[in-house]
Image (cartoon, rainbow, N blue to C red; front, side, top):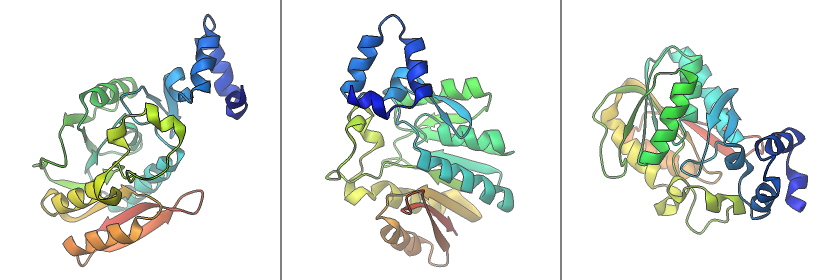
Length: 241
């Protein structure tokens, strides 16, 4: 089983404990590229246990950079009212709330994803206000100091790993070359952000210049910076309005 060779010893041990009565079935799923995170049922994200299932995207290591940089940024800015748009499992919102004294909202289009996020919120005792919204069709009529989002940003013709076919496709792919969520969120931010507010995005590796252009069209005096990931790809964008 070639795929088993790519799995860490700790994960493999855990898998054997969970599926001790039907480990062959678990191995078969792995050979079909089923994500081991779904089989185990949770991930360790920024030292936080986040339950995952097929209703939510599996949090990536790169997104921990977003959380880490956002925590440092928010401590410096002393922002209090934050929203996580396209929250999925709630991983970002929960990790931020655990490390900061903030009022945290989080939203998503998927009822199933929100159920998982609320379960994670309860287990981590973070007391986040979750709500359902189709951000592309509706506006959020509240004010925030900071918007954080890891939205769908994969282009429809982009090559993705085999495991992603089991993840919710609405959490992965976006129209307009992967930019539609960025444009809508930035547009909405004109009315959503308090004075001197900020937007923090996870972005695709080739999208920085396009998103910067959109941001400057709505916030021409904004300060924009990009942080790279472990592979030296553009990954996090800060837009200080």
